[in-house]
Amino acid sequence: MKKFLLLLVLVCTTNMVFAQSEPTRTILHPTSNGNLGDKDGNQRAPLAPVYVYQDDHTLTFGANMVGCTVMLADNNGCIVFTDVVNESGTVEIPEEYTGAFELQLIRGDITFIGEIEL
Image (tube, rainbow, N blue to C red):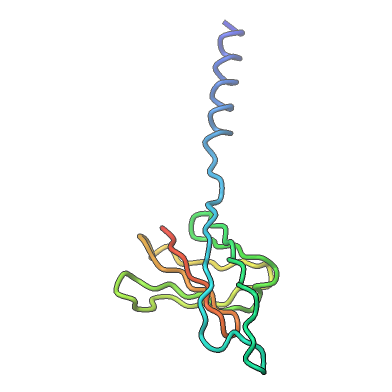
């Protein structure tokens, strides 16, 4: 009986460990809000995408995105939420926002855009 209970506890704890969710990675693709060239009009190399990690309503960005503006747009294109990436590289989106949104990350003249599900 003790072996059975021990086995049962082991199976239950193993299932709980595997049931924890991993953050979802979303790719934000760059678009230009202005001139991407240098002062002489020469084009720069293509910009790399930005990766954001989503764990429920918490978005985590790289350290180089601290201070950038984050916006959520609904399916009509209306901005419904705006915040700034904090010192820890995160943005907390209120629980009241659920469903599919366009995520916009603004860094200078560049806006990075992707889709997220809350």
